Amino acid sequence: MADLNLPILDLSELDRGPEAAARFRDDLRNATHEVGFFYLTGTGVPTELFRRLQKASRDFFALPEADKLAIENTRSPHFRGYTRIGGELTAGKVDWREQIDIGPEADAVEGGPDYNRLIGPNLWPAAQPELRGVVEEWHARLTEVSHTLLRSWALALGAEENHFEAAFADPATLIKIVRYPGTDAPDPQQGVGEHRDSGVLTLLWVEPGKGGLQVMRDGAWVDAPPVDDMFIVNIGEMLQFASGGHLTATNHRVISPVAPDDRISVPFFFNPSLDSVMPVIDLPEELRDGEGDTTSAGAYTIAGLYGENALRYRLRAHPNVAEAHHADLLAASASE
Image 1: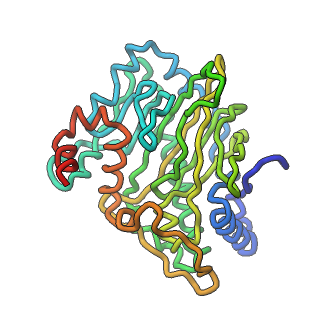
Image 2: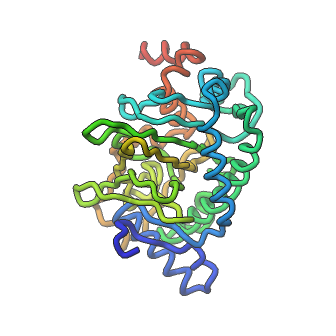
């Protein structure tokens, strides 16, 4: 794996005594200070779960179009369900992918803050009942890994281990099961456009042997190929903000595969409770390098309630859902 362009961290180091745990936390801080991306192994996620997720993902996209459109996201005011190819935007440009979005399973909430509209049930394909069990197991496992990483970052940045815990008591998670179809275009096509994640933490699984993810390092795009049963992890602008800019949210993109090939990936986004504000760490003097960027996404936005940020993002990314279910919010935004 010497040709990999990202650091490799082993989460199981935390269970090998105080010295190994301290070394892991130092490596975690350095990787996300210098790069913002890393490979993560040693998570305890069983190999058979990776394989079941791969099969379930492939089976979903192999369903007849009518079965997928039966759970199209325009049927969900909570932005859940299937998005057809070209149905999501990044930085205002069309992403060439299809996907299903799955959030925390809950009853819809009437009234309250606007971001309560994000709370509600998922849309599960009737033609593939086994998908739900696999995804819920995946969600439980990755939630545990995410909490462990947050505790490690807190200690690595000089805070108490539980610094982030209260804000993530009911985390706003999102799982996207994504298929990038191949294209015949002579130039690289936008699977997902260049961006930095706006949230806290992303754990990404990519189908073995399927490239396409590129990360910006030292002003150049480098490939981040998948490694079997490892995650590709990156932080978002909210964790950059919470670290006083010491940690780095990094630009990345996905290039579409060349036809007839395609690509499956499953990102897991881990963010604070909708009604929480991301806690900021008062860095120790030795970590205050004076170069941190806390304003690139607008500190006024990142510092607010997470639910307000999440709703704005979903309205921008899925204008078809916004127009179908949230015309009042679009009208209010237009008048501001």
